[in-house]
Amino acid sequence: QVQLVESGGGLVQAGGSLRLSCAAAGRTNSMFGMGWFRQAPGKEREFVAAINWSVGTAYYADAAKGRFTISKDSFKNMLYLQMNSLRPEDTAVYHCAAVRDVRPLDVMTSYDYWGQGTQVTVSS
Image (cartoon, rainbow, N blue to C red):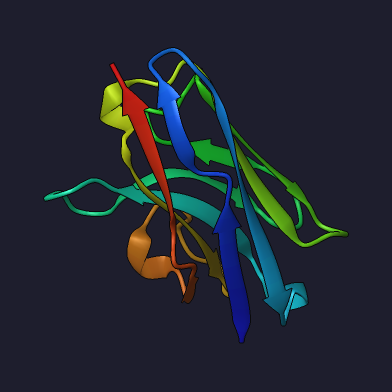
């Protein structure tokens, strides 16, 4: 089992920045990758970014490219999402997730474990 807890969400003006963190606990040494997904009110959960836990290769949704950066600290079992140039359409609950096996990291159904999420609100 892997437990995930997100933090760092909040209210920010358009153009601002936030850094989300996700603390992982449990059997983290068996993880293949971790990712960030978000869900806005009335919308489906969507992929934002993911990272291969051992190699560090990062993947981004088109909406995140050039503005968001995913990173990790394997020693601390921490996952981060640096979000810059935020827009009102980035408003959502952001969830981190972990996947054990080799699966596509941009697919929600690949993931085995999920955090409760942290709210990000971007005002215009």
